[in-house]
Image 1 (cartoon, rainbow, N blue to C red):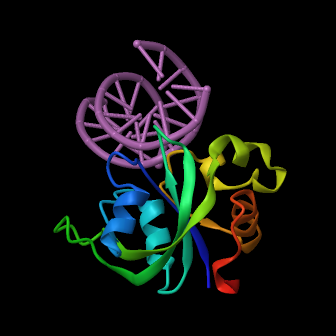
Image 2 (image 1 turned 120 degrees about the horizontal axis):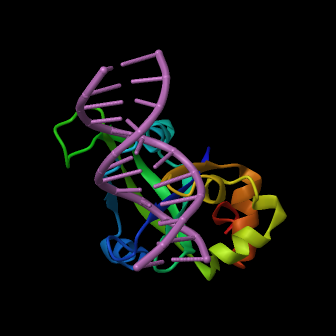
Image 3 (image 1 turned 135 degrees about the vertical axis):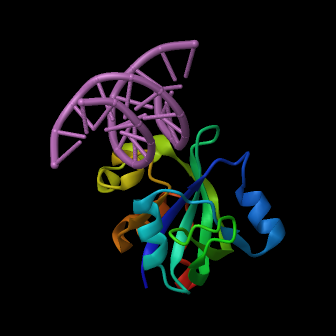
Length: 141
DNA sequence: GCCAACGTTGGC
DNA sequence: GCCAACGTTGGC
């Protein structure tokens, strides 16, 4: 079981869109490092859904429903997509500002590599963000 | 293989 | 709107 953070502009695809659809493709990634992270995902892994640019906050927890397969939005075999499903909305969305203020989160790629859209989190980092969002761990609920 | 120029992302 | 941080492209 690994933990991830997936970033998207809410104007493109939002947490609300995912809740409405129930299950969705995470596709269109065209960056090797992000692609490598998609390839490392296993069904059942948990991830946060982060709204970038206009919102800049973590909205909720999602689950990787299906591991990487060829991205249907391109014929280029280099790129992959996964399928994700919502698990739980955070009781309070966690702002980028709060993440920056938390010493235990200083190493996360969200802060250190702002352009990366798919990144791993440690179990500790995942837990800290859940705590900031006043949300119990989905495994325990 | 190097690097300058250019394009994109995302925070401010 | 600006700029930092990358990533990509193409000339050499």
